[in-house]
Image (tube, rainbow, N blue to C red; front, side, top):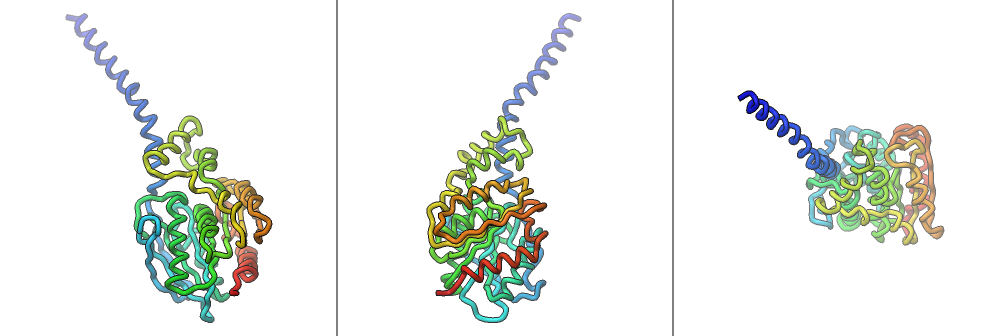
Length: 312
């Protein structure tokens, strides 16, 4: 009887030892899947500011992404002093929203409006008040931005368009701006140059997991299960084949989220027949160059726009 009890205890303890061992492989694959889902389905950032708080007139607008007809929401902010045919369209970063509240984006927009530029600010899908549940880190957003350009041209009868984007929005601006014939100026703050290689090298910064073995698993989860192909989000392949555009690239040398070498590679890949400028700032976190260098940032952006966003 005693031996039976011992055998029973041994059997139970053996089962309890096997449970975590059997669960380990499942957790090994489920954790990266969960992270991949979180990266592409973050909780939408909420917009708490509006242009009226900065003394600006504005109109609530809606349009649809050319990719899949997802409804997108935004603001049309007319130039303060005169009717204008020139528009700056802003493109916010990952897990952000149209007002770019973290860096006081509306403060910059107020100055642009006062200097004679209409401004279109909008939320990418799964952000702010826009619909959609998936963030594509540029895969979908380049189409959202392309549709914003179409809106400015077709609905607001604009003749010249500049794009001003940050991080994911900067990468999307480089792609959509190179593709769309109405865009003549692209201002890209803290972009990555090629999403596939960037994720393979830097994904651990966002996931907080070791690069090996988790980065390849998360990467392939995005491609196979979420149908997001990072190889299609390649600003560098767009800029190297474009002409007749003007590029102003901004990046902080102390950016830990997207290394400034990404912007240097982009700048070097832009053909010399295009107007281009690179400004590397110091002592700023990711996309915070404007917040810490407001006067210099504003001066440089306005100078670039005034020089290259001209009506024929």
